[in-house]
Length: 202
Picture 1 (cartoon, rainbow, N blue to C red):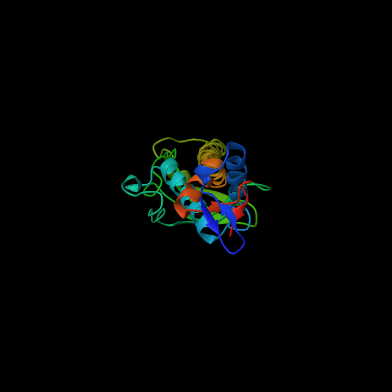
Picture 2: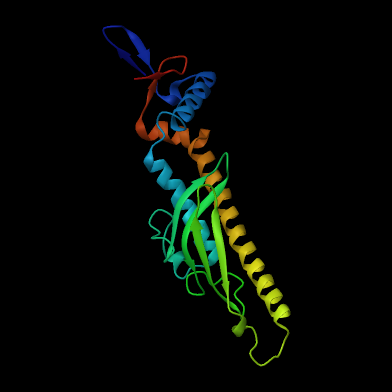
């Protein structure tokens, strides 16, 4: 603690406060971190977590040699937008292939997956080629088309599951960055001081 002059009042570090005042101090900083102090770096952190989760889900080659913060992203795919609250969506743009997303359920007949970021969702276009299904079999065209649709539905479901995983981890990062544990570390690293009741001294 230390005296502030000329007003002659005392300010305290977090550890010097009484338990109730400590709780108030931490809650106050957590509220600021999720409000007035929220900035573009926080947005970038959440985007990085979501992009890394997508890479994990797609098993993007060599993604494991990078950390979350320095991961360069999935080649050919851009995370353009996301909403963790109201709409709960991920906006992706680009193309998924066997090379950048080998974990997807690729099968004969599936060529690539086009991703188009719309206002509040990602349009997923699974491109199939009927000629790649099994060229040695003679089958009715209707059956071939049904097989292509089934393959496309399976791949689309896998892409949607990956995006849901990205949303899940994005929400977890948001909760962490606005939670008590992060706020306490933020207070200690910035050496904030408080009044006796836990109000931030600025």
